[in-house]
Picture 1 (cartoon, helix red, strand yellow):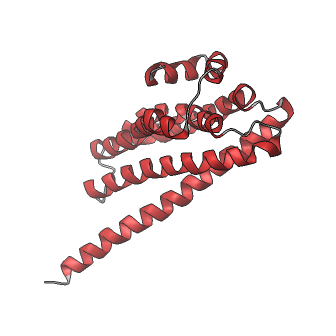
Picture 2: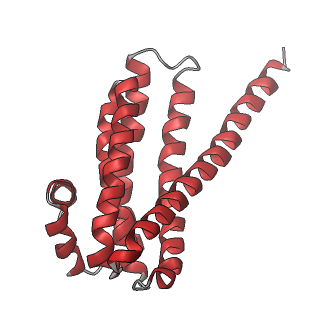
Length: 197
C-alpha cells in the first residue's frame, strides 16, 4: 500500500486499517525509509516555513534549518529506539514480541502527529494541531495494540502509557542533545570568526 493511502486509512478508518496491517510483513528499515522519514518531514518543513513566513525566527534561517534537521533526526532516532524498547517490553504486557510488528505500531500510530504538522505553517495553530494529533496518535496506538501486538484488552492502557512516555522522553533527550551540540557548534564557529578581527 502506498504512503498516502496508508496514512489516509489509518486516520479515517483505523480499526479496519489495523486489521489490514496485520496481514502485512514489514521491517523497521522499510517503514523508516518508506513511511517514517517522508512523514516526519511534514512538521519539520512546515514549522521552518511557518517561522520564516511569520517572522518568528529571530535567529535567522540557519537556526530554522537546524531546528528542522534536529526535528527529523530526533523523530527517526526516537522511532528506532522506541521500537526496540516497545518490543522488549511486549512480554511484560502479554503481547507478541516481534520487532516488525512493533515497528508497524510505532510508525502508523504517529501518523496523526506528522500529518497535523502541516498546520505548523501557522506557528500557534501548529502547536495546537500537534497536541490534537498527539492525542489521536495515542488513540491509534491503543486501537493497534490488539490486532498488531496481540495485547489483551486489560493490558492496553498501561502499555500505551509506557510506549508514549518512552517515545516522548527519547525524542526530548535526543532533540536536546543534538540541538545543543549543533547550536554550540554554530555559536563556537561564530565566536571563532569574530576572534580574527
